[in-house]
Length: 353
Picture (cartoon, one colour):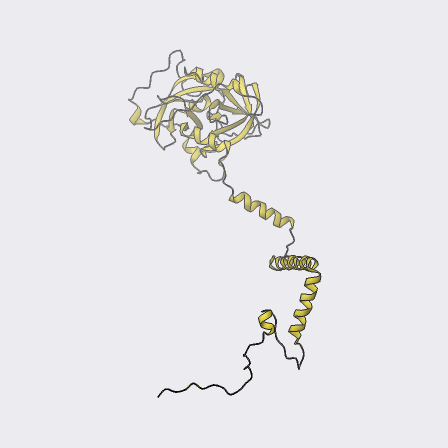
């Protein structure tokens, strides 16, 4: 059976249910509060901030920027390490630390020494004849040179100095002459002083690599106290020195003397050219003067005689020949003399150019 629809008996209009909009719907940032208790502190602060910000927006932003800057500066000061007093000692330590860590280039003198040292030899004189070499003929002398002297040379006699500390006690008892020489060509020609080479009956040469050999005088130039020597045995890696004319020298130029002072060495001493064209008068009766010498102040002592005097490039400019000490003691006082390499090499038939 079909049911009849039911209708309300009320004659009035039924009110429509609607939701009233609250503060949160109109303003999401609005925070409701209980009207009975009044606004909370947070609500009052928010209202005050909104009022101030709306009225003084520019000034507020400037104030915020200043406060942020001050905060950053304060934080930076807090994290900075404590300032230290910079004393002279601390400053010196800092400078030394920087210098110690800086790569060091080799000095001019060390480079010159490294270049000349393979050509430097030790020249020692012995009294005893070596029977094993008695039947070996001497090398032929160079053309145009006088015969080698017999026995003691005409040059200044060799005095044996007191044995210095660090030298073997029997060193000067073993050798009657102690000097230096320099190899100037591939054939093993050696330049040294005549007063070294002619002071003994037998010469012994010790090369840079340790090779030892008997040697003979093949030429002399007494007026310049020079001797040209050849060794019987030459090392396989013989390195002749580079020669250069001494006329390029000027007073004040740097020079290095290389040799065996008192048999110690090879040793290097550094100095400058003190003068040119010097004359050294003979020290004894009948001794002739030596002219056209290079004066230098690099330390030289007995044993340096015959050694090379080289320039800053390691090129031989002279042969060390004498020192001057007014007291008569044969030790260095700052005045040394060298024969120019033009004179020395000319005696051996070589040209320094």
